[in-house]
Length: 246
Image 1 (cartoon, one colour):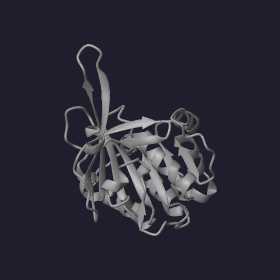
Image 2 (cartoon, rainbow, N blue to C red):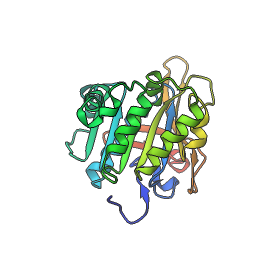
Image 3 (tube, rainbow, N blue to C red):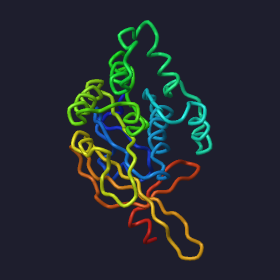
Image 4 (cartoon, rainbow, N blue to C red):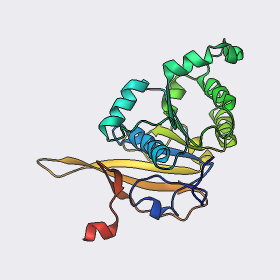
């Protein structure tokens, strides 16, 4: 793996890394949670993209909802246009095709997608990628019959940690809930929770304001403040109290 001195992964969200001891601890499993429209996929992709382009870290993005073309076109519209061989994007179709090959003969009759993803990750050479995104947990659950979520997710998270990569799992939240994951157990198993939220402001011509908060981050001193989150030509930026007072 390639590192830049400290054992931290930069989010490349301007202003955020300074609030979390310069980044996310290497080798951890983290939830990116939020309701639809909160830019979870965009943030996750941005972290992998900028680490690939600016530092040379290898990233793996597994999209269970969007196909590769749709996802990458969406990200290009957000300014992430530079081509890089350091970021591999897999979608349901491409991954299913790989898992039906002779290499994965034992999965021939396996329909449990958590088992399939685990086997795929285990097949990758250790240290072949530094960061991984799974988009999303909820899409994965829809393809899996979880009889014992606590036990099965414990082993899934264990597999992710054994890769030594830093993982980001996208988790859908419903409106008016304080649960950051479907089963709740994910919140205890993970090392970090990044919460994306938004609210409507104004009365006549209302608009959405997005916010980001670090709910949990093991082995890190972090701010518990929710920061306004903006996206522009140079990527994501947070506004601190000092910024707002200028």
